[in-house]
Image (cartoon, rainbow, N blue to C red; front, side, top):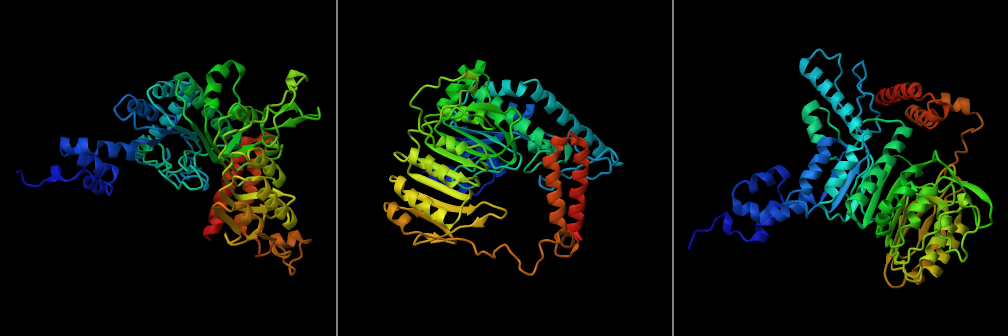
Length: 522
């Protein structure tokens, strides 16, 4: 009988020991002998190759292709594609122009009197230029198609620069890091450490990048024949527009089968006004303009949705009212140019999550009522309701108790929208810190027993402060200088596209950000 050694350790114990190793150590152990490599391969693949985020560069997507053509392909089920771009933003004075809201980049410039740094400066500039051509020529889409043909994907995600691709549900925490595959190569070649974002862009550029990424990803899925059941868009840290959901009719045969096969949607969108607004006919035959025409068209093609998460949406054009509309009883007979998207009936909807949105409470109640036959979980968190007070909150909860007859899991945390989002406190047996959370069979009774308390009338009012003398206030020590700079910077970003002086305002905003940082530090 041979003496005990590493090859005789039971597999479950070996896997437990390996769970303490990082990726580099894991690789070293697998190189020790063939027995360990074979024994640990599945665990290694599940841990490091089941969920990967890629960036839209040739070397990152080539890695995706290599994985798809290897024995690791069967393990890769979740793929995220980052919207970020490599931006050559080194300023001539040696100060990085990357805004503080994005990742800090210790950048080198051509003024550094150091040959190694100058070489890395050129390399970073080359990588940025290469990526621009790579995306503009559509090579990223071609590589995605090639990779997706070899993968049995369950979930795909478009991820913004500062968003985590793997925040799945209210019960699913951060799973993997936000960095994309390929960032380590950039660091090795340029000493630029890209952490949670890649470069700084204007809002118009952010919206364009997000739209192109969503469209390229979905088209690649359609062309490859891959049909994931879940589609995520995590772009709350950057700007998106309705254009991301626009697919011309000549692409319908490729895109609609992907949309119609989806069972889960998780969207956190910082959705801004659409450049291509549409006029539609309302049920009363009144022509109105909406910003979410293409998003509605997308949802109308997704009848099999079981899990719907909508986050960071400001409903200014009645999107939730439209989702809650009953199915039309008569066919539309008006001009085809004004035909509105048909409100979807998610006949299998089990879970509805509304996070950090703004809407009318009754609109949400209509959505819940429409899907009450199947809806079992409702998660409403950090959401602001218009025209909301204690009476309206009470009516909403009572209405929820009546229409949510199959609800088994409910979380409620909301505010009254206004100049200040005023917290509405919910008290009850399953309430804590003003938030109601209950999971169980007695939902109707627990909801009916809830009490609602509004904010104090003086919660946001200082009787000792004269609000009529704003000039004196802004000149006083009570005004936070840093917040002043930051708010004005946000204002500039809102106005820059309207005024048409983007480069000029970018320089002003950059100066304000530096000044704000200096003020805060002193």
